Length: 405
Ligand SMILES: *Cc1c(COP(=O)(O)O)cnc(C)c1O
Image (cartoon, rainbow, N blue to C red):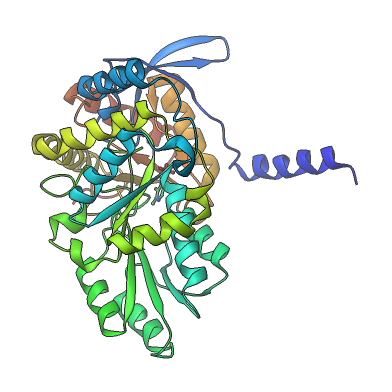
């Protein structure tokens, strides 16, 4: 076999479909978020980032940075080992206590990323609980899907946020078999929010444990940033609450929170936890500072929601096809992979606006979109410029406008 030819052909296929990924080469500039420098063929230019998952600008919060500088000077660069073999730094212990408190749970466990947290936790529980059946929302994130696959447990998929279908799936399983319902709180590509209480009620009725991914909600929802479960007073209804420190908390790392024994079980059997070096002390210190900051600064969340609502209202008033949802996510439908990429390129090249095209397989074909994530640091002027530029791009590419309501 000509291996090189195989790789080349696979790449060519992606390009032909218009879904070959090109990374924007960015230089984030301390103190200027959401502005950044874009290095491109032939030069560099200042742009405004409209698609960052640093939802609240915590990546540049001076309190977070000070904590990281201090930890660097105190403890050095790396953790020095896996958690079991010399890699548990005091910062890790404090961070897990902080996370347990954030979610009103007995314990928490930190991983290198939320992708690893999902893969490890789901695969470990589902592989070890005998005869487990997994019941999973159709729009669950890749990391949850990989965890289910890796477990080799039986899997049933219920229609996205559809309680009737969930109940049918639950009903179809032998009542004696152990079950786990897996879902997210905020779905990041369409901004939908799950009916968490109702899902937990059904899970209870059918004796299932519950696993929620709050990656796109932690830091942003709830009085202290504990996510939608905190906002709705449901922390104690979930067996596992999973989250990230890479998005609203602005640093990196994933975690789960739950009972002491559940966390101890994953700590003791989860290979993605056991055999990987723990995060650097600097990172743990930064996460800790960010979580503590957001627990006490609800005004950041209020401003975030206001910015998001304002952008939605303004885009809708101009007839741009915002995909309606109750969260902070602002998706605008294009519906074609090639046009979506063209719109994104035009915004970047001509208007200094950076928004990544979202194409298959992240979203279904025919629903390609631009996904805006306004932060508390996006000004009215930035929004004026965005709305005007989008109108121009829509006109030029002949994209569909919606009748303003
Ligand atoms: C981004 C994301 C993850 C992975 O989080 P990382 O910390 O970036 O690895 C998990 N779940 C969902 C829903 C995500 O969007």
